[in-house]
Image 1 (cartoon, helix red, strand yellow):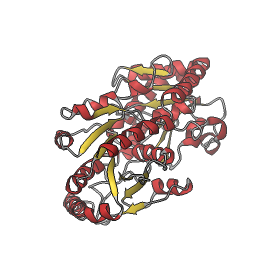
Image 2 (cartoon, one colour):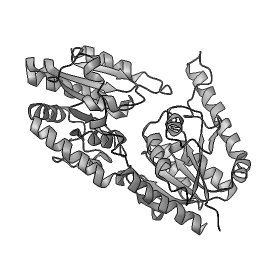
Image 3 (cartoon, helix red, strand yellow):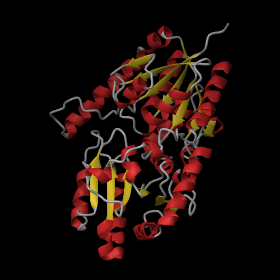
Image 4 (spheres, rainbow, N blue to C red):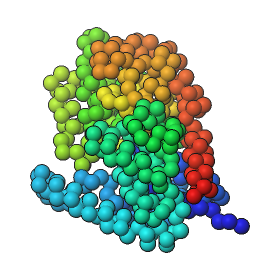
Length: 404
């Protein structure tokens, strides 16, 4: 009887951000009677701890030469531009070392296919696949923001070893000018039983002594400029101005922090902006949370303020699973997750007045909040099931291995 193919999953998202959470569900629901997963990660962290908790910590390959980010600092006491550049150079040589020595890894583990989860993984995986003559599948979860990276990704997409390019949304696929025959769209999936408001205990109201009369308008994600949290704050200013004294019962909550590899501390900038707008009494910054579910439990409205074509933010379907109405902009894959006027409200990109008034409308209409939230959870159950999406991915993996 022919043995199941060994598949190497390359993942750099060790803090369990969107890519890491998506891969977690893929590893959870893969049929191990049909394939055997191996996972290459830079280090043990939140992502691998989740695997351990689920009894999925098997065939894990930890190699620090594959950093979470090429900007990973190598000189902890020095953050100047010259030391940042030196860190990048060292990290590049470390990755090259990993690629050059990869034949040992591939042969030792009898890897038949390489699955790449994330931007760095796409590049590294394509090169490992090339020198080892192994087929490669890309799972593209982002839209490149620089012309250089866009060129690199499009160039590598032409490589014969890259057999399929799975994109999380239609807008994510449009960044590819070449290799279009390899493209397909498979949305992110989520397990609604993991994101269930009925089985989750809230954290925000108890911690900050907020009664049920308080309306919590929240958002979760990485605190970086393109995520548009400054627009969220500007929208909050519109809300407070419109509601007047009634705004005392409205709290805006931001969950997340700025990753270490960003030069500027965007979170500090946002806190300063809140103070400048006189909104300190209305805002709560929760910081990074390994588990955002206790926060989602206490939210009444969820805002996704991304000011760029966000590929397909998991935070949206997580919030919808918690029966929360979504407010955002017409941007990227958000339009494929949120059904405007049914599960939330989408506004003209960057229009903070529209967003602010949409928040005011949902604050004043609790029945509308409830109906949108209920429709949102149903939409997740029917369209974004983690099990169903994993079966789609598994079908493509097996198809490539059979033809290899």
